[in-house]
Length: 164
Length: 375
Figure 1 (tube, each protein chain N blue to C red):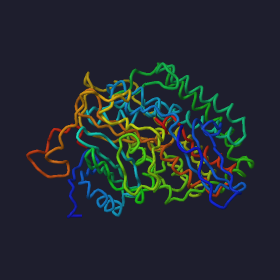
Figure 2 (spheres, each protein chain N blue to C red):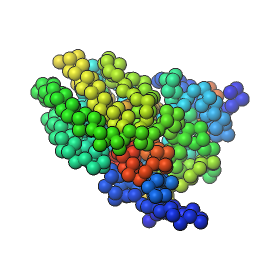
Figure 3 (spheres, chains in turn red, cyan):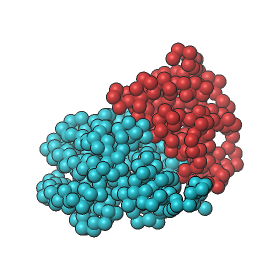
Figure 4 (tube, each protein chain N blue to C red):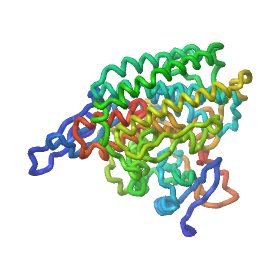
């Protein structure tokens, strides 16, 4: 796992991995083989500069907990699907697509799930208010100089608020 | 229009019948639509559609302060309303570093288990209605009413009490509370044998449940099933034991599991869980500090920072809440991982190959509540 680009921290009782989007699937495959067999949750969220996908895993035997997240830009919101590793994330990925607009390459049934099929918005994006209207003065934040998966002491506490 | 209202027929086959089950089907416990293909009595294909009750809680919650969000969490799984508040509160407490006093932890546990019994009673009544038995419904709702009365006396509301809060509970219990709970438990224990006789021991029920809708252990884990569904498949996974919250590590109770993974096993697990809940509440009534604060020290303005995922074991399984906070009064993102949502993914696994009449029994053994599936 040494060549993968990720940063591991421990928060409370969980291992938290921030991973480069290109290594997202490779890291999850490695974790799956380490015994994280139970998919707890998958969250899509809008960080203000891009989209983030957060996977929560659990090992039934070991009791270990892991959180894996990666960021992708708004104009290329795609990560590989991991439904073949954990079939239980199938609906969670559909939900992340539905509400946030993330795409999951290789998903077996890539449709909206909660909203109607002909809906056009992804309502959890920060550029919409609660009514679904575009906020007039919303601007995306610049992509952080040090993304969460890079080790750099100087800029570790960068401007992003919700670093998982 | 919501999605494809049908599935495409297989070319060359004219004997497959395609039926829309729901969203207004009385046995779908709300608004679930399953499009099924039938070959005679056997189900050949099943495509579930959800989202008819979608309110987008998660977007609404981004525009509410943390204290306001608690009452929204109540409204997810309205059958076990109070239990839904807890993972969100635990996550925020972790981020704030709040200590919960012992008495508050015990009060939380007592209410948590009371609501588990109440929720299982609703499931038992309505689940048996689906199978054509009307009698259990009348009994279970009477017992559940006693729990709701207990809640009303202390919290002021029956189903959606909004009672837990950061650092403990919102107000101290009614002076008669512990006496009332003990009386209820005594009464409830005399009722349980009736339920066994009416349901589990009934040969009519067994004929419809044994060997129906079998879910393997591996499939249950991979699909992220939780609660009685995964425990009926032989996996002793219970959040109360796996990552104890509140005072759950101080109680002695068992995790009922069964290896069969059929409808009967899922019914059996829920019955045993009610018995275990009675055991837990009895221990809590003994051990609860009679005096002491019911709420810890919490900053007047709740402004957490960081990200935290916490899970609890509600009546339906693993309910998790992921809170991402940036130090302001409003959260960045709140994600609710609801157990019924994950459990419903099993519909294609369990329906295909079953008889159409058994699909109803399988669905009621999964016990979905659409307030939390669709959120």
